[in-house]
Image (cartoon, rainbow, N blue to C red; front, side, top):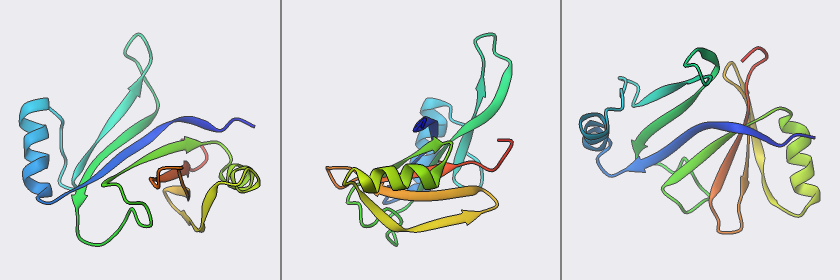
Length: 128
C-alpha cells in the first residue's frame, strides 16, 4: 500500500493572522487570497499544470484546530486510501485520532507523531 503521495497543505496559526499574511504577501510574494491562504498549483518540469495543488494557510490562534497536538502548525499529507492507512497506523501502535471527516473536499483523518504534532491525512475526492 502506498502511504503518503504528496503534501496537500501547510496550516499554521498566528496571534495576528492578518498582519502575518500581509508580511508573507509583501516580502515573499505569496498570493494570499481573501480566505486566508494561497493555493500553489502543481506543474511538471516543463511548467505545464498537473492535477493538484498545495494549500498554504494562516489562521487565528483562537480555538484549537490542531488539538490535541501542541504545535502551532499542521501539515496535511495526500494519501490514496485513508481508511487502509489509518488502520495500518493503528496496527503499528500509532496514536490515531478516532474522528474522521468525509466532505466534498475529500476524506480526512489524523494521527499524532511521537512529538505530539497533529498530522492530517487527506484522501482527495476522485479525480483530483
